[in-house]
Image (cartoon, rainbow, N blue to C red):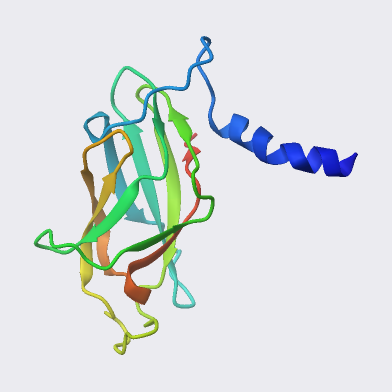
Length: 166
């Protein structure tokens, strides 16, 4: 009995993450033009060589859309691309973002402990000023990183799944 239940848990989790409209249709993929975002440090999160930032994405349109693991890129002060290695804790997640609502994920990373091939403690990579998101529906949008920070381990970000904000 438990084995049968365990086989259905991934399907149940997907159903819980992707709510559908009354027609049963999944909303279209979000586009950058329909979204805005912020990427801010969570107060009191720094410690033991790690820090946590919160990525908030808002659908500012009157239609729901689906957000699925957007591509991410750290950008420097002049907009130059920096090393970026996002690691989603649950790949291929999708979440329906209702009209005029927000979803959020957290990103844990080291701002000062060098990884393999990095030799400098502290600013082991150039300071990132913006986080660029490229949703599956097309386009790109930038979120200011507040405060701007170095992301060590060649830009490695450990990201949680998106969830609805309360």
